[in-house]
Length: 332
Image 1 (tube, rainbow, N blue to C red):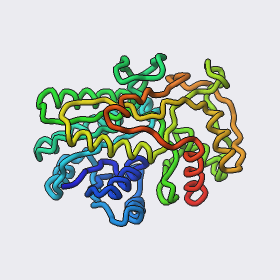
Image 2: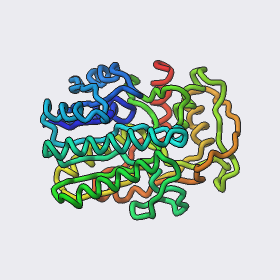
Image 3: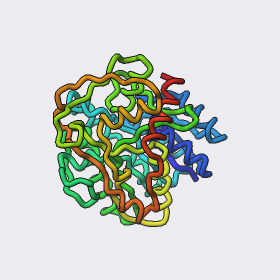
Image 4: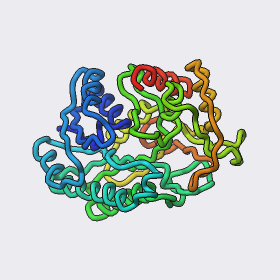
């Protein structure tokens, strides 16, 4: 039996694939390579000592995803695949709703047809919307401020409804916060196409000379230095969280929403300073106006992950920045 990772060649998916293979799981990756490359799969194999099975398929192709389940004995799914740029989702909402929602519906139909009823969903802290009651807890009110966030919230509801219709399903909704860093080998990491949407890939491109400076959106928030505060965690900690969630759903039916984060907030300028200290590179920045929809402070209460899954984030800012810099200077 195998675990299917949709979007398994992407940033988070590739690290999770490598960790799963290292833990002895059989892994099948389904990816359309819209934001990744087949070469990543080769690096995953090099890291793990064995290469995952690979299917080039788009979740919008119902027959294609059905063939994956026909070809391989899949007993559980980790669902990463989806468009993820907040700004782009505002500009092209229909594309986001069609891709993310329809793709998930096709996946669930294939799972149902082939009697595969275990799924770990890659959700997001964006489902807490503009909430101000930090740290965020899983039972806080949910909302969204952009189409990307709404797709995450809608998919959570779809999976809840699937379970309501059939209590043999087991669903983990992993709401993670801000994954950063790279594999400590330097072989895999985040390589966004076009202008990065997240802080750390942008910092990496400034450090390697690809961009002249970092844009910092807002320095008038009610935070210690005026810049936004987020919960940054190492991507390898996040990958291990998926393995813990997979172990949990193999033993339990039901639906559980779980935050994956460190429980600590770090401001944009604090992260810039941490990266400069590790890399020895200066990161010039320019203060820009706030972006619509951004909130001042966002970090997790990770208690449930510790109690339910036995998971805690282990790596600190220095390791996040060191691994990112190791990857960036060799690959960007």
